[in-house]
Amino acid sequence: MPDSITRPKTVAVIGAGPVGLAAAAHLLERGLEPVVLEAGPAVGHAVRQWRHVRMFSPWEYNIDKAAERLLAGAGWNRPQPDHYPTGAELVEQYLEPLATRTPLKDRIRTQSLVTAIGRAGFDKVKTKGRDAAPFEIRYQNGKGPEVLRADAVIDATGTWFSPNPAGANGLPAIGEREAQDRIAYGMPDVLGRDRARYAGRCVAVLGAGHSAVGMLIDLARLKDEVPATEIVWLLRGESPEKSFGGGAADQLSARGALGIAFANLVTSGRIQTESGFRVNRIAREGDRIVVAAAGCPGRHVAVDELVVSTGFRPDLDFLREIRLSLDPALECPPALAPLIDPNEHSCGSVRPHGARELAQPEAGFYFAGMKSYGRAPTFLAMTGYEQVRSIAAEIAGDHEAARKVELVLPETGVCNGAPASLTSALAGTAAAAAGCCGPVATSGCAAPSPAASSSCGTLTKPAAQATGCCGPKVA
Image (tube, rainbow, N blue to C red; front, side, top):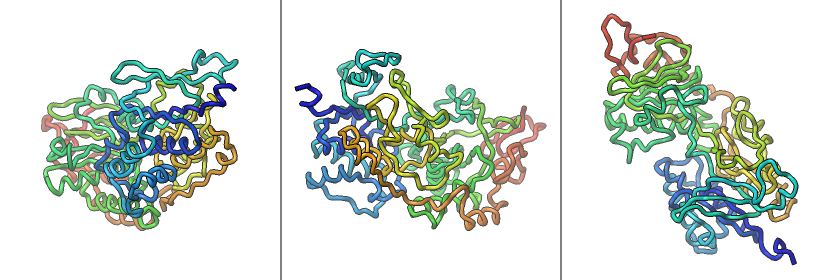
């Protein structure tokens, strides 16, 4: 009898985050053999980087059903469904028990960085017989290079370790790499382990999504404790209202509350706002870095630290020998692009999708989790859980179950703009919301208002030069 019939299919799952471990749980239930490769020293390595951040989705949206069934057999106590976990709680109360107290414990290889994936005996060009060849996954661990062969691959590596750069054109800003010691990406822990770096400093945050909003709220809390801390919000768009979210209309109440709290900070003037600020250059000037905007000669801010919270992108380098079909803009599976494109789509609902939409021209290879969204934002864990349930069914040959995908996401309460209650609040307090270099929603090249001057970002230049709170207007 052929070996492919007598043994269960081996499926390589790349990444041991929430979606990767959920994939392994579903594969086990299907009688398949998962092998999970995690680059970090422990499961949830990416989540541990934002362990201080409280999620805006409660436990009921963060636990996969197959994973829960495994945990129930291990005597696990389910967290309160309406509690909003931090990243640390997600790891400690869910991912670690799943990885250490269930049958998954023998199927996870940590400190195993995947460096390349291909087909055994086939380069990317060769076609005849390709689909029958096993995948060859090469990875590095403490013992040196290793090779794993698998019948299918689920790439659930996420995007956390591939942040977008500060440059508005998608490239690193000129000088960005040279100023790396003054730049952080994502969401540094300004109230905890990174406090000393930011307390009492002038900090600019670039971005307009949930990460940037959370970062600015944390800095405002730090300013309450250390009043000398100064905060500048740099956003590429002309208006901040989209960052305020859906408020009370958001079905995830914590996400709505985040937007309301942020709107209050902006409208009260506690956060200096620079809209229409598209970064193109970063340079050192004494003890500070100067962040300059494109298209407006002389428009810049001088700060002590810059936090870049402009989203993430997938790492595709180790997939050079895999045949991929990706949307040219979002770098996600083409079938998903129209549903999640931030140029067109800003609502919370995404049509249910699974193996069919996530499959690639390389038979047996799938993206899942945040990486399946490419460069698009606003991914929820429950989306990934339904993805891997469908993928596991497809790999196991249960095509009917794979096609029956069901997904109901909580609405954001906002489509293409913030609710009237928030936009009117902003309009009514435009003067109070005047930013470091001009009022909120000012056009890109507006000169700074002398009345809005602040010590944050001031450059030392000859008095003859026109100066504003963010430094002189120099060509």
